[in-house]
Image 1 (cartoon, rainbow, N blue to C red):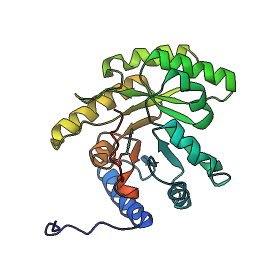
Image 2: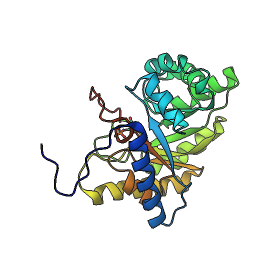
Image 3: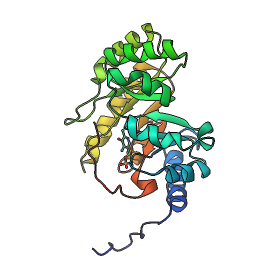
Image 4: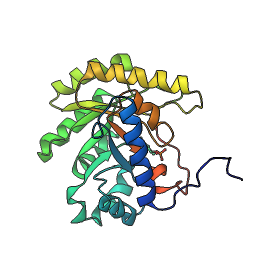
Length: 239
Ligand SMILES: *Cc1c(COP(=O)(O)O)cnc(C)c1O
């Protein structure tokens, strides 16, 4: 397929992709009246090798995200001691019987969408003595399988806090559509729910839609393919 006129060829290395992303992020954040440090980049390393994670750490990407416990556990085991400075975010669906292992392996759980999950995590936090902040995953897309309804987020946050968990904000996956207004409308709903929930993290925006997310107030964009290149196996995103 030919490149369209005026389109730049895709940058090749992780370093180059990160540089391009950082520059554009700084521009878009600035245009939206946000400071250069208001939006952090979480590197989504699912299906990437331990070497790729180490390369990301070397570039200063200290927040990484994984979706599958088993895959993450194998990779994290090879990262010591370089992994010591990492903040590892769990992005996948939380099975309650895996809550303890998730708490042991990760530093943040971004995907809490029901009280049962929260109870299991709270119990694991008590057992392990390892406090981990959680985000409420919101459902803002018509086809999403997971996530709490934005109108229920505030109550869920209260219930989770009553269990002793630190709720630090919300996470959402945008609708898969080329309709920009639909994306922005969904992100605005997420931002409004974030305002009601409180905390410091609005985890919003992926490779295809992070620009709109930043304009809608995202404090953390979750980037996989725009950093590491297209994933080999197009595994379905567990939304
Ligand atoms: C895979 C994934 C991402 C990153 O997706 P890209 O489109 O490759 O940037 C972000 N968030 C979640 C929850 C994911 O599963």
